[in-house]
Length: 311
Image 1: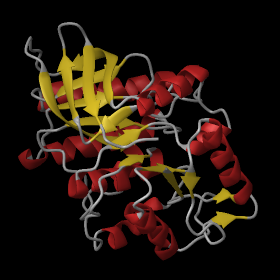
Image 2 (image 1 turned 90 degrees about the vertical axis):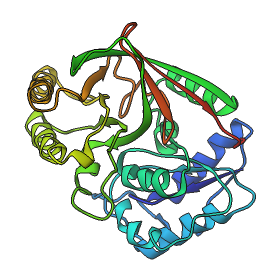
Image 3 (image 1 turned 30 degrees about the horizontal axis):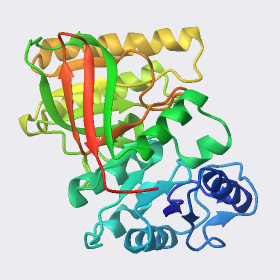
Image 4 (image 1 turned 135 degrees about the horizontal axis):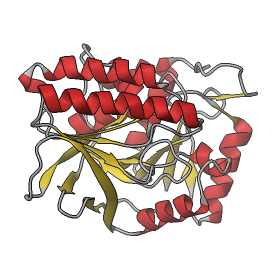
């Protein structure tokens, strides 16, 4: 059993019905608490939630405490999920460990769950992406292969950009997500804990100049040694961009690499080479909150993950 939740931009009732029908075709039963209060009758011209933070939190809480489900899958991202963080901070850790599936605007929720509940978070396509065919057949196939296997061995190819090279594999807990969402938590009680971790950063529709601003902000944060990570992995930043926009994104990344090498050479900077991590038509799953290992000698990232949740 899967609980579908809507913590950010709402879906229509018709969309939720399509999500449940899609899952049934995969022989997966699903549930959506408080359907009428957490859906909209029509697609809105904005991304703001049409439901209160309390209502969205209540749905999430019911899903967390539902003894019949083992997976919580977000309907979509969009905007507004961070509204529930103050309510989430007051909630006791649920007794049952579950797999949470979500990314994009859910980034800060995901990292809260990782830090405070020690739940794994699967960065993977959300249900809205699946019913609207916003990911490839290969992406869909790899996602369900992951969900149907208790033990998963994930491998990604990487490019070295900056930092001190080593022949010894580097391992650490993976955290991170959508960079613009993460940056909104900097300086708050919900700021991501970077220390000695490996950070995955990705985003969509952020021009090179805006990325440069976020990267500069990170450099300032890293001046405080209690925030120094082991490594940074850059995912996809160029979905939907034209050639000029892609060049500007790469320009911002090159500036960031040069500045890291100059001011923080002990932080390894890498880039996933196939644009499959984060917002991507070819998106592949990866697990936040679990160890990932960097092998510079053969330019790969490897992650082994075992979970008890079942479809």
